[in-house]
Amino acid sequence: MMEEEPSPHLPEKHGGVAAAEEGQVILDGPNGVAVAMTPEAAEETARSLLSAAEEATHQRDAEAHPS
Image 1 (cartoon, rainbow, N blue to C red):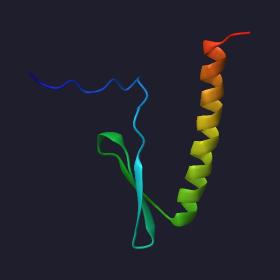
Image 2: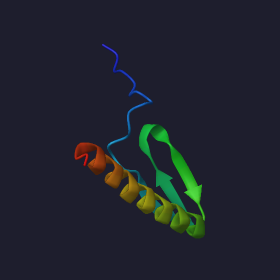
Image 3: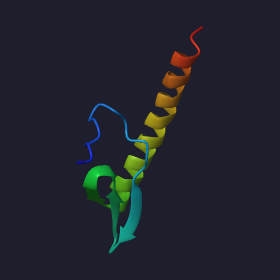
Image 4: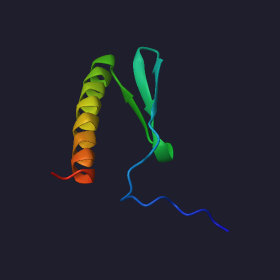
């Protein structure tokens, strides 16, 4: 039996893994996604991800407990 591909509409439940290699940051994500970034781009991405994660958590919590 073939394993089904995950639906593109469902959010990934496992985070990517970052590593520093030769002065670059390599982000290995789900489904073979890999991105190389400068340290500056990685820092900017980290800030953006944290901000979006906080906002998404608040949205999810608000949906679970409507006023």
